[in-house]
Length: 454
Image (cartoon, rainbow, N blue to C red; front, side):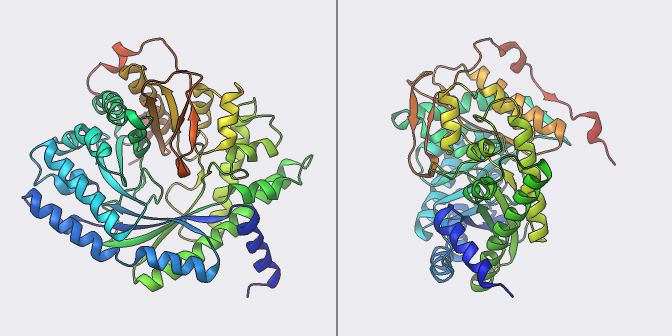
């Protein structure tokens, strides 16, 4: 039984501390749409998505209204597009046609985003993989809801440096294709190492081939709840701090579990996982950086930041695992710059650099996320930044990612504005020293020795 005190406590989290279900993401397998004709493929894909997700948005809104729990986004993830298009696509134009179809289907069913315009190339690229990657600038410029990802590295395979080198140029092209809107196309493109099959968060969500025909994955977020919980612990020891974060994460995950099972029952779709990720927003009080400051740091980026983030990430996962037997996805703490007002302030005040963010990614859930850099940054430098982050994920056996935006026409000291949950961000300084000769070497960085576990 749930006590009246627990009900009141949860209501307070929702009303005052920005607790919400960040997303209900329906994963849809499109493997049965595969054929050898692009037009027929697009028709099958559109029909399949509209059939499966017809009631997704209205069901989410009904649950939010009945339970009083905000459900911010309703999203769809699909089988990586390079896989389903391989038999039909003969050119980049065919891939763009598929991208437009996915965007139209997302608009028809009313979801915020559709993810899975993706390629899995951690070892090598097929012809379809390369065509999809080369189509990204057009696909992202000509759509509104489409999200794309490329898994360019893994602990088992190493780092596909041919793909990393290509992606540096593709990201620059995507930035140029959406230059009139602060290069916003790059906000919907993520490069992964060790990408999970069941991630409900955009822009990196795709429906892995190990998943079923259709599944519901839930993303819960509560940085404000955790911040409030530890705000009275100044001077308390680390054991007390850890217990408080863990117990709070447990409560937040239970909210996600409740919504997940209710949505599964109403939509007649199996429940997959709850992803408890402390995903911030630009709203005041909904910041991971503010949690770190409550722990005793003057600013995110100060000495001790990586240790504080490691503590936070671990306790969030421990609390979530106790609250649900189906915790998955990314689960932990996100540190996007543009979506976290505390991170934005830290960059502006000179406390946080790309180098410090890279160090922090060793212990958090994702990686260099929503980082704005000068628009004239060389593409080889972009590739080098990606390679560094891929190496952290590969060697540590964890998921890392890069979502970086070279903002055309802007330089250090200026800001980019994206709006909504994407927020705004200062342009961050990057090293001016070249890595061109390194990233232009062909081939693959091999997997680390500790990956051989058979």
